[in-house]
Amino acid sequence: MRNDFLPMPALVEDVIVETPTIRTFVLQLAEPMPFRAGQFVQLFLPGVGEAPFTPSSSPSEPGRIEVTVLAAGRVTAALHELAAGAEVGVRGPFGRGYPLHELEGHEVVVVGGGVGLAPLRSLLYTLFERPGFARRVSIKYGARAPQELCFRSQYADWAARPDVDVTTTIDRPSAGWNGRVGLVTTLLDGVDVDVRDACAVSCGPEIMLKFVARKLVDVGFRAEHVFLSMNRNMSCGMGICGRCNVGSRYLCKDGPDLSYAEVQAVPYALG
Amino acid sequence: MVRGITPAALAELARTLTATHDVFAPRRCGDRLVLDRLASAGAGELPWNAYRLPEPLKAIWFQPGRILARWPRRDGETAPRPRVLFGAKACDLKAVACLDRVLRDHEFKDPGWCAARESTLVVAGDCTDCAESCFCSMLGDLPYPTGLFDLCLSPAEGGYLVETGSERGERLVADHAGLFSDAAPESVERRADARAELAARVRRQNERFPVRDPFEKSVSKHDRTRIWAELAATCVECNACNMVCPTCHCFLLHDVRAGDAALRLGLWDSCFSAGHARMAGGLTPRLQLTERFRNHYQHKFVAFPRNWGITACSGCGRCIEACMGRIDKRECLHKLETRWIPSEVAQEID
View 1 (cartoon, chains in turn green, blue):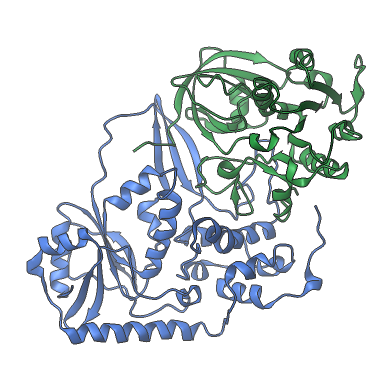
View 2 (cartoon, rainbow over the protein chains, first blue to last red):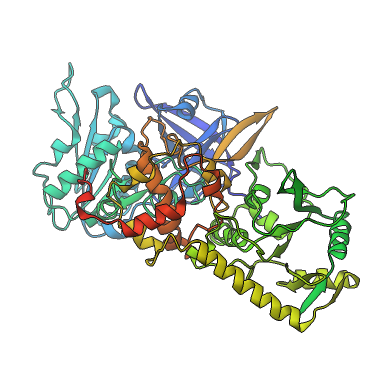
């Protein structure tokens, strides 16, 4: 019988330093692992532990995936010690992935905070690879400080695509920063899309998701069209171990992205 | 076909099986019975447990610290020795039905659980008495097995009636035909009377906790009320209720080094622990005990039936006996149904 607790070996091909606290690990998998944007994998360090990440790379390359990691806890700190050539394990993919069918034919506002842009990049690649699938892609991204903006070198390329725009902001003024200052929610005031028809997809800290969702509904988005990455401590990935539930749903199986309407139906789901 | 077996022949059967199987059976320990592995010598008759043993069956099929995987993969793992389990009661088997759904009957399968289930002969038995904490009747369940057993024993004159519940059970009886006799029709009738009588007794002892509504309704209507603080008032978060619960299956996937290799362990975990769902950044989705308490009920009585079509409570009452805060699940369920004062509804905070 297949053992889904046993990871597949993977080789760290490259480590990209994105920001002082965020690194991207380029992984060469022993076998391709086909995944949909938004599905997550468990990255395993033998004898240390495992943590869930949504690949930041395109699903069109299932044998060579990129995982972008913020050093935030025990496992992620150990991951940041890895160099090219290290052996790790990968399990997955798990979860539903982004609701692409909901996005088709609509304007899509992508709202990211900090390392939350990582899973969204996989979605962006998916949308970029299918011209015309989304009517427009508007990227709103915020980070604490200029040096914490993830994938900085790519914004210009993204914005150069037809029907794609990128706006960034940082939380507090910083020397040498001439861009916008303020939380990412400030980028949603007067957002330039048909709010009754557009969809939004957001990933970031939970407190950010809460206010992004409220703001989007305030400016006219339908709660059913706002998708939030409700990332919790997904561990087994199979709906067994019991720590990632939101109401009756296990995010590892039924998520991690839920619509704001689904989230609102669960008491205190967003604190 | 229902057969008969004497206590001496049953002990003989158990002893014979120890040659090829790990046999788990009730064993007398002081003034109570516990579930234990039967030594091959197997002294005397098997004690009869009148109701469920203190240990939930997950203790042998879903052990507190299981090896889920070895890294790197090690081929040629030896299959587990087959097992026989004596002493399972109806509530134990309902819990097995719950765990089968989570661990076996969907896209992902827990190999350890599947192998253990597959390789274990289950010799169940009727309840012939009930503990004060027994409340299977409140779940609409009965104190005698109706499925998921290979053999089912019911005490009768001169020994036990034996009913087979599977092909495997039939084979076991056929292989040891000399130990079994034909059952008298009147003992089968008497079994029905005894079963009905005990079912009525369990119902009667729980009449002080009248409930009418489905638990799903009683629990979910308190989604945003403050009743949970009252119910959890004496909870000291010792996790005992989770440990003894036959349906609780939360586990911590714990990685350890073992020489050059690594082991992936599944350790029993508790939804009452503050750190149960904590994330890397330190955020804990259910920081307050009251939220965790509500989540426990929500999972057993709302989420589980919605996801798997069965309530994740067998009414075995072990949690009631284990609780040092004297929290009685029956009383909580009764309060959840009857207490509904709109002014109690907490202000929404999100």
